[in-house]
Length: 122
Image (cartoon, rainbow, N blue to C red):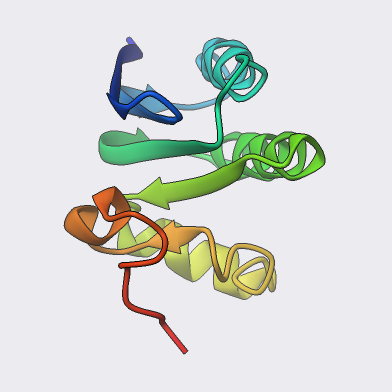
């Protein structure tokens, strides 16, 4: 079962904590909830926190690509934190690590920092 917890430490910065298994059965729920937040008026940054989530198959990667595209079109900064090493390897295998280069943040505390304070990865 997939569960969510939404918090907004800053009005424009929404954090979506995801709990449970992300697979082809639960991806529609993740897509619906994430896109709803991306489209929310005033949203400038959304953090998808996957620390407590298990990305079980390729559908989890496909939905991350879809959320990334939607955020980019709307001018919303997407941050994905807490991503498992196996998902990072899969992204790299399909050369999606370049697409997500400025999106994936390995450490939760860095993701919570305002963009002008967060250390650059370059």
